[in-house]
Length: 265
Image (cartoon, rainbow, N blue to C red; front, side, top):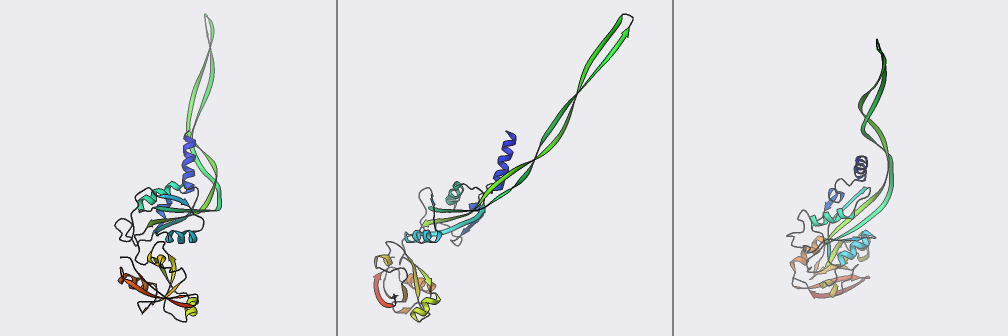
């Protein structure tokens, strides 16, 4: 039993499960604010949900379309790591959904020394004869000697290692506009013949942008007649017009269109 326990401890050490790698290699994307008390995020009211992902980029876009915000991620290479470790960390950071990914990389083989007590006992036998006037007699006896020491053996191991990725998501509060902006690429700048503007990367379902048919891939040139310089500038103008009606100048498929609608508070 003792030998089995030692071997199990060695296996845990080799697999990287002595500490929680999802916590050890976590990268926070909330700027240190966390979820609790964050004005943009809703704290989860139930246990985190673990889901097996397939493609991090596609899965991430779908999560954003459904109103979730990426609050952090963990990535590392290790042996067998239980999903319960990711769930434990999700509780700590306030994640509602965790998407899990793993891909086999290689198998690490070798042997580890295992030193155990080695006790040996030897027995020595002897005899003696005695003579006297009344006759003679034989006597027999034995003695025991115990030697204490250690013995080292080598335990072979084979550990299958994987690249692990976990993305941690929490639902956002209702957004005033409801889209994720991105700076223009060089190709988009050439397309519209301007450095000014911002592209729509993701549209959140049910948001004002979604309800008024702002599409992913649209390029917003102006808001209320003001030229949009980049993604940061777009966020600033949208933030200054929460709860108000805005007019958008959009380029879609090379054509300029106008939209007007009210933003959420």
